Every structure is written in structure tokens, then in C-alpha cells.
Amino acid sequence: MYDFDTTPDHRHNHSYRWDMADMPDDVIGMGTADLDYFCAPCIRDALIPIAEENCYNYRQRTDEYYDAVTGWYERNYGLHVRKEWISSVPSTIGAVRMALGIFAKPGDNVIVQTPVFQPLQWAVDGADCNLIPNPMRIVNGHYEIDFDDFERKIIETKPAAYLLVNPHNPTGRVFTRKELETLVSICAAHDVKIISDEVHGMIVYDGNEFTPLLAVNDKAKEIGIQVVSLSKGYNIMSLPHAIITIANEEMQRLWMRQIQAFSFGYATNSFSIQAVTTIMEGKADEWMKELTEYLKGNLDMILSFIKEHDLPLIPYKPEGSFLLWIDCRKAGIGDTALDKFFMEKAHIHLDDGEENFGPEGRGFIRINFAVTRKDLKEALGRILKAFAS
Ligand SMILES: Cc1ncc(COP(=O)(O)O)c(C=O)c1O
Image (cartoon, rainbow, N blue to C red; front, side):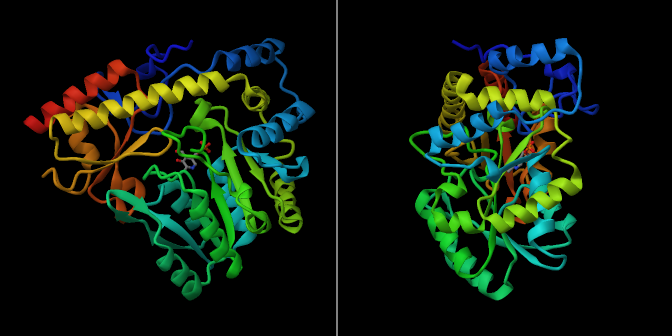
């Protein structure tokens, strides 16, 4: 029903991925994690009346909004969320930073699985906390959590919080319920709060199931701060809106005190609220189903291409989202500034592993494959030529 083969002209719409001043005219943007596609038409339909009214007074979050959010969690994940547990702020990383300001003190430790998405490192740094890395292990070509290292570091460094990123960026892991139960049980035993960044949870492949933190068990509800945004799944990055769900009453009280302090109760965006309401009511469900199929087609195409041409690249097949993490260490192109290699040789903009995800990303690249099939074919052809030269 939906067309993912035609897109706006991102080379001229101020896109971070396609339209930076230093990019060549024929660049193919495969970096920054947004989607090239037009949004679900229901989003445009929901937003036009707001623009036509042309009045941007302070707006309440309506009953429809709260019903949409609670209904979405119930319908998709069997998670019963109460209206009083929900609040919103303009960005996911901002929510993480706020949570660290409330539930950790300057000087406290915060444990995170690495490689880590750099803005999360900045949020930890900005809260004057120390990031304790729990490096993921590669076991039989699959990224796994090192639970022994996790628990040992929790005992040794006594972190105030664990920053969970599920699905994980950049490895593409969608943690299983069992893995989440283990993480929750270790954190609960050692009095560590969990801040869960779930922005990548909407697109999952091949029978993998995404589980929001608060759906894991009652212990998770006691210690969890669940943060989601629809930006990644529905391409509404410039309608910023992160939804925070906290079930623990005392934690919710402390959180709402800061929502008031930042004035995020009043400071909201009528476009964001309306888009989120429409999506969470389920009006874009079919679009999401088709998007996931299209992305899966792109992913399969890249994986087969690498195999067929015997390229010196080791891809880690993501279980969700639209980012492919690739080990280039055997490619003979060095371990650092790999983005420069792809930009110079192929005019492709992608993300260097170390620069964007820390030391465990050295020698890796991350490719955003949410492009049209046509651009993907062109990009693969250019990569082949770059390696041939
Ligand atoms: C793990 C993770 N968290 C948060 C964000 C930013 O989310 P938002 O734009 O919804 O604030 C990103 C964007 O790439 C991300 O990968």
C-alpha cells in the first residue's frame, strides 16, 4: 500500500545525513539514524488541521493522547500502564540526562553495555557521572551480554544506575525476556536503578520480540525508568517527543518535580502530541508492517551482496532497527576514520565505529540501510568498486 521507493530530496532539505556543507553533490547518506521515506499519510492528515488553525497556545495533553499511549503498550506488549506513570520531554537523550540528574549524583558510576551510542556517553558526562563499560562479547558471530562482568562491576563499582539500550545501538541486538530478567534481577539485588532507552523497539525482524522494561516483571517496575520515542520507527525525529513511564510512586514523584522545574508540563509541541496520538492509536500500524518488510529486503540484499562478492567485511545481522554494524578489521583499510575511506572512495556518508561508539567500535562502521532500493543498489556498487581499487 505504501511507497518506500520515492523520497523527498534529502540533498536539499537540511538533512544531517545527506545535506551537510562538506558533502559531495552525489553523496549517499547512510549515517545518522533517520529514515529516508515519507511518513505514514495519517501523520500528515493529523497535522494539517493544526497548521491551518495557525495558533500555538499552551496545550494540554488530551485524554485521547493518554488513552493512545496506554492502549499502545497494552495492545503491543500486554503492559498495563497507568496514566499517572506517564510524562513526556522533548528528547530521549534529554530524558536520560534528566534521569541521571535525579537518580545519580555527580561522581556516581553508571554502567552501560559497550559499544555505546556517543550521545549517551555525553549524557553521562554531562551529569558528571562516570561511565562503567560492560563490553558486549561476540560469541559465534552474535553479540552477547557478559553477565559475569556486569555483576562483578556492579559489586565493585556500586553504580547508581544502569543505562540499558534495548534494542541495542549499534549492535542491533534485541534482548530477550530472559536476558532482561537476568539484568533486572542483578540490578534489583544491588539497588541499581535502570534507565531504559527503547527508541529502537518498533522495528523487529524474524520473530524477535521487543520487551519494554516495565513488562519484564514487578521488580522492573520498582526500579525502572522507561523511555521511548516514536522517532526512529515512524521517522518523526523533527517532531521530538519522548515518553517516560515510571511505575514506582516515589521515583515518579521525584521525576515530576523535575518535569515541573524544567517546565516540560507546559512546554510541549502540538504537532508532536498529535502525531504521537495518531500513531499510538494504531493508525500507522499497516505502514509499520510494510516498512519492516521493506527494510528486511534491504538488509537481506546487503548481506547477500557481501557474501556473493566475498567482501572483506563481517556484518552483524541486526535483530531490529535499521542499522548494520560491520567489522572492517580484515579489510586492510585501517581501524580509524573509516568514514573517510567510504566518503573519499565511494561518496557514501556512514558512521565510523570508534568515533561514534567508543573504543569497542574501533575498526567497525555503522551503515543506516533505511534508504530506497535504488540508492542501496548504487551504494553497494560503489562499495564494490572502492574495494576493487
Ligand atoms: C539509542 C538511541 N537513543 C536515543 C536516540 C535519539 O532519540 P530521539 O531523537 O528520539 O531523542 C538515538 C538516535 O539515534 C539512539 O540511537
